[in-house]
Amino acid sequence: MDLRTIYMGLELSSPIVVSACPLSENLENILHMEDAGAGAVVLFSLFEEQIRREDALMDADLDQRTNVHPDAEGYFPDLEDYHVDSEAYLDLIRQAKARVDIPIIGSLNGISHKGWVDYARQMEEAGADGVEMNIFFIPSEMGISAQEVESRYLDIVRVVKKTVNIPVAVKLNPYFSAMGTMAAGLRDAGADALVLFNRFYQPDIDIENLSLISNLQYSTANEIRLPLLWIAILHGQVPLSLAATTGVQTADEVVKYLLAGADVTMTASSLYKHGIDHLDQMNKDLALWMERHQFSTIDSFRGVMSQKNIADPTAYERANYIKILERQK
Image (tube, rainbow, N blue to C red; front, side, top):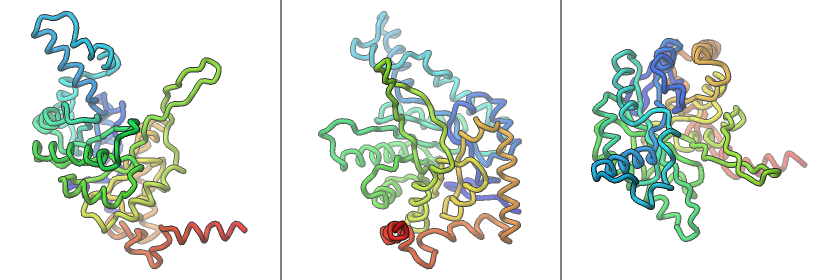
């Protein structure tokens, strides 16, 4: 079976991609990911706060000051909170590109223009095949409008695309009121791909100690339905590569996303649960499914279950919701 696919202009040997996570902080893990069959690796995120903290400390050193700007000292996380500094990040890109043949995609995580342009350029110069922009912005200010939120995303993409020649993916959250219009706007701003969806930090509350609990919950297969819906709707409607990045635990989720119209599927939680070699099993199971259904290539079945291609497009809309409720009577 031919598992090759094209993602934002890059040819991948498999549609199963390692999403941004700390597993890729280690070069040996990246080599292992390639050997296990990853189509590409999105490196762990370089955070805007990290870049700004490093820049502030550098400025302080150049100015021969002991402290950073007064307002900044308590604002930024400690550099010790990050496992790898920005220069080491760029060096990891160089090392990975010297050792593997699969695409290496850098990841930037932030909320403003600060740091994005310079570091996107440096990632390209270090050899990255693409950049994934994780615009992690929660509009908690009561006075901010939906248009202002959307403009922030679009402006950042425009600025970065003017800076680099490598493809740029935007990792989105699912909370835009008009996802189709936003997707089209990002394409007009220069984005090459959309990654659906970002799982925002969602704190819990310790009711005994009256404190916030910060912990990571791995995604599960039952979380695929929202990104599945939007990938199925966007496929063939907006000329962008589409990546699915929630709930990919087995080849079953890979198949579903590809049927909906995804170009690639991204996984990290499954590798924490089952190990990096799980990539090999997922590829084998994907190939077996293709053989059973007589599909010789990914393109031969990609998007056949998208809204554009199914016999009843309303199945992805309100009409199907009403039918489901009626069946419960």
